[in-house]
Image (cartoon, rainbow, N blue to C red):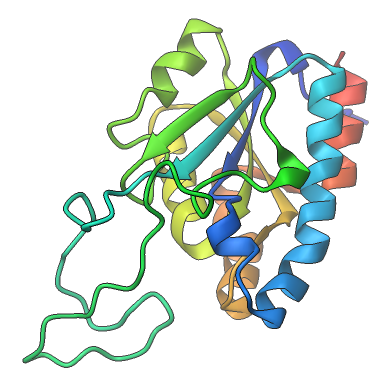
Length: 210
């Protein structure tokens, strides 16, 4: 039987928007939802550190005046609440760069050698240096975790596939306020472009591949 493995030297761990403003906000439901996600993400991070892997953090870095945010027309906001056709959508508070809200949570704190990827759109690849950093280190596989599953994680996964990266998506280290969207992606969409594994399985894959 073939063994499911990952080569740590050719793999990178990428966290998407694991930021104070998304996770540590004064909302008990959000904090409760993210508690097991942080635990799973920490488990994978510890393994990545042990294998001296590349670790990267894609983080929202918008201007405080929203001048670099997307202002496209759409039917709903991110939480699927309808938007009136005759009214410009209200811009929700954003995570402005160089603020506490835009910083990575302490539980997954970056090390000096890690890569911080400022981003302005859903994809961690769009007009960032992520692809360059990965190719410079001859990385061909991305281990992806973070939130939201149906927004930034999905957008980054599609971009990674189109750039011919192998993908491993850590199912229990991703989260979305829309649980049905998360489940649908993990069951029916992501398996077409990636290996979908739990944090414990990813740790075992790295251990087997060293």
